[in-house]
Length: 210
Image (cartoon, rainbow, N blue to C red):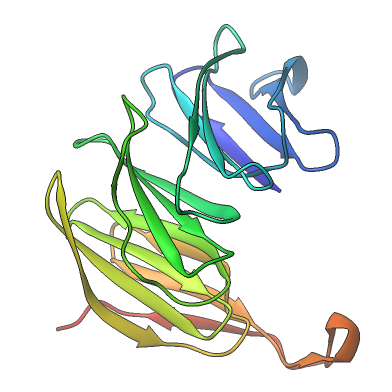
């Protein structure tokens, strides 16, 4: 469900929903170097670029921390109050993980060293991605109900919802440009049986407030 590059090991990791594992590839050679059994269905992942990676396990509502060099699981943390964790991002400075809970309209904010859930603000329904802007100290959660929730990091242990940005229905995935502070999400007109109407695909851009 995700492909993430880890700068610390210069490896690319694929997160495989069907086989419940992650595959590590050497980025320079393009060769598989190993796999890790994650014990559940992985969603998105994040790296601290210091020797630890984190991945949401959607069906067990957990975060797994693993060593991307040794390819071993380091910790497994239950996300109490978070259903179907999907999107995941990291504030590397304050060591805070932001997990979007796709099943119950929450964002689980987690200590990346202990696994403790610090806060759980409300977000939109059907979250599939999160992002963190280190310059603005803002976390974002994009949801299928057509919203991006903006969460302000007031301190390492204090968080508040700053605003909710309206996008379009089904705009669930998201990317952040940390240089321009722009958010990108995509959507299309969805027909019955999850089919997409041709020529309706759009890219939406949310800009930083002036």
